[in-house]
Length: 555
Image (cartoon, rainbow, N blue to C red; front, top):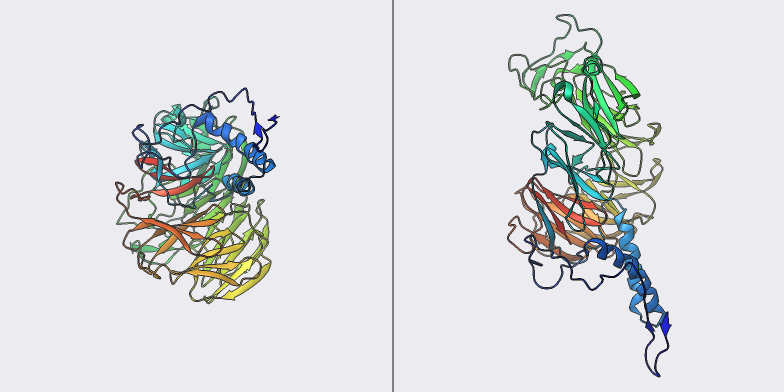
């Protein structure tokens, strides 16, 4: 309620909240050693208040802003708008609450990121966004971190030889899911559990040896499933194939006859079959049948046989939160999390399928010319576009959902609706390499010549261009931007160079002007935000750097 002011005085409001009894408690230290902020006495810009205090202030902040409007304080309107924008960015793909100023380390978690034994190539750097937490294997444990504080929300002991999924390589395709399936144990004692955002695990289900013999080895799948796969069909007769390889890149002939692969998804808790699909074998060039991949489906490591490099029976898969990318001689295909088989029309080795974060799937065909095929979330054909289609790595919710495509001969960027309906096309110098962000009503992308350009989402007219070689040469023209983040006001570019340099550059989404930049690999430098083997990921509006030896919060 409000107390009447003295003459010429200000209104005074009493805020009563029975739950907020500790608002004057000191803030938790943000330094890695627990001794306070390592960058000085002031809190790091953008740092999130810890625990219940942070949550309560997030609730009280809008109330305070409204009260400030009542008494005529002009800053409150902007404060409400900023608060609304920051909250919106917490749920946006690649969204970060605030990147308007240089970043500092706000917390650090030291420990192994990845399983003790690699179950697949690159699994040491795989994570999942589980609810609003960052989850990953750490040795034989499954760990979930609060992205605002770095505190362990929970830790779950898995057991011997664990494998959890779906996960994805941080900085590229980290999984976003509401549950993880974890397998652990050896031989007949191997079990499956499902883990939710609160860290509660389902009852263990033993994976029977009979099922393994009948359906194949088990691996964690999307949507609370266990996946099993094996080659099926008659063995090819001797001499049926004339393909041979002297080295992985020096092959002749074709593998004409082979066996398909049956993929089965079963409920991880009950063991009941949800769906089953058989990928038929397709005749394949011998160079697509070499034993080049490092890990087979059953987790065994590949051993290259120099006397017989053609492997017409081995296969593996990359399992993400929406699609299973199956690879192997004659069966290179993709299966959605609902069991829909995609991309069997084109030749193996000439296609790739990715799930679109806004829903649906995108298939790229590489057969002379590049072609892109759009599917909806149920795997139904939506449309076909000539050229290489991309979706943005970060969005702020402005403008209609947009896909971009490079022209067939390069030098052109074309805009499409998600159903493939064309909107506009614009001539530009160089090919589009990465669709970085859809922010501030603009499509922001990098070209092959190294420049970052912003085109108006509605018309395609150019808004601005950033050339990393001008006005300073901190980054050479070989700069590559694999990933971007946005807070709706700035677009944050994670940049790399061919010499191994890494850094961050923040550009104003309206003008394209450099707001700030940080680069370097020396962790002792105060302005450094990159280290070898690290990748960046946004979780609940927080920017995190994940490396094989730990995780840092940046704010």
